[in-house]
Amino acid sequence: MAKKRSKACARPGALTTKQRNSLPASAFGLQSERTYPLYKPMADGSIAPSATHARAAKARAEQELDKGKLTRQQYNTVVRRAEAVQAKCSVAAQARRKKADAKKGIRGGFTKKQRLAALEAKVRRNILLG
Image (cartoon, rainbow, N blue to C red):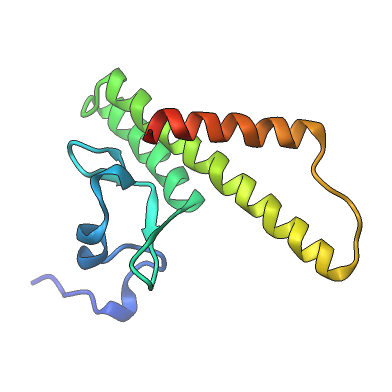
């Protein structure tokens, strides 16, 4: 007889069924099937991009492609959307570091390459979610 897992044993960062169901379809790598979540729900009811979920989605999609459970087109869709979320998280992390440095009195800013990457990520995000 299989044991039931208690909530204390659940994987850290794993979405509960209630949280997963509360996410809009646009928060998933494959929207039509609501699989491969890329965003995480916040306490105030909004959603935030999650680099961890995006990395996991890419890894799971590759495994499913190898098993023949995903088509190449579905795999490409998941990867494209996951990379857009990762880029968004990267830009947000850079902004948080810059803000923290400003509080500490450290001078500096984004390099030209970083500004260009942020602009490209914004354009991709508008294309994907727009």
